Length: 284
Image 1 (cartoon, rainbow, N blue to C red):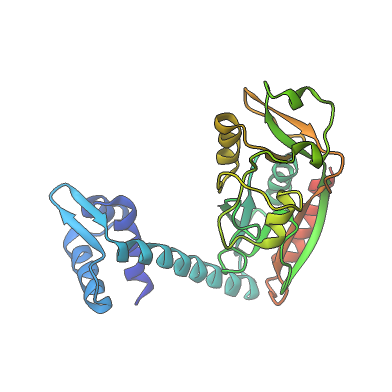
Image 2: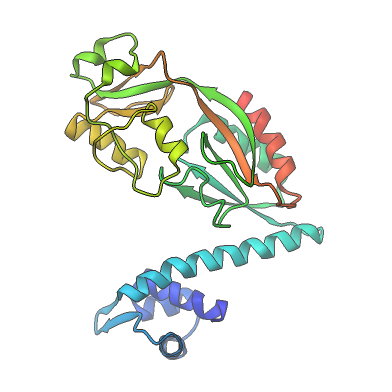
C-alpha cells in the first residue's frame, strides 16, 4: 500500500464524505473514489459503506483507519529524523499524558520555541491506558509522562515528583479530612484501567492493592466516575478540581514522578537538547 493511498483513505474515513475529503486533499473526487476502490480490491475487503449522503466505516475500515494513522505517523517521524541528521530543521513529536495545563509543560513550550524556532513540534495526547504515550509503537519521539511503568528498552529522566491525593465528592465524609491513608479507602469502588494496561502503572494508581470499580481511560472519565458513582479517583496534587470534587492528600502514597522517556537506541539529535530544556522548565 502506498502512503499516498493511505492518506486518501484517512481523509475519507475522517470526513465520512468523499466530496469533503477531496476538497481537504485538494484533488477532484473521481480519482479519490478510484483510489479507495482499488485499495479495497487489493485488500479484499469493503472499507466503506457508501450512500447518497456520505459514507460510514465498515469493521475492516475501522481497523485500517487505526493502522493507517500509525503508519503515517511513523513515516512522518522517519522523515523528520532524516532531516535532523542531514542538518535541516526537523520535526519532534512529543507524547503528552493527561492534563496539559501543567505549568512545567507550559514553560517548556515557551523555552523550546525560543531556543529552537526552526523545529516543528507535534503533540500527540495519550489517554491513561498508555503511560508511554505511543513511544513503544513508534508514534512519538519522546514522552512527557508519569512513572512508574515498564522501562525496558527506554531511557527515563526524572524532572519532578508530585504528592498524590484521593479524588472524592465534596459531600463525602472523608473529603473533610486534612489527609488520608490508603487504608481509609479500603472497600470502596476504585477506578480501573482496561485490560492490557501496563501492570506497574495500574498497580501504582490502585495503591498497590487489587481493586474493583468502573473502567476509565481518561482524566475526565475518572472524575465523572467519582461524581456519578462515588468512585475513588487519584490525582497528583496541585491541579484544579471541578465543582463537586476535592482532592485529599494521601500520606502513605509514593509521589508521582514526572519524567521524560524515549527509546534507548534512538539517536535522534533533537532529543538531548529537548530533555535539557525540559529539566530546567519543570524545576522552574
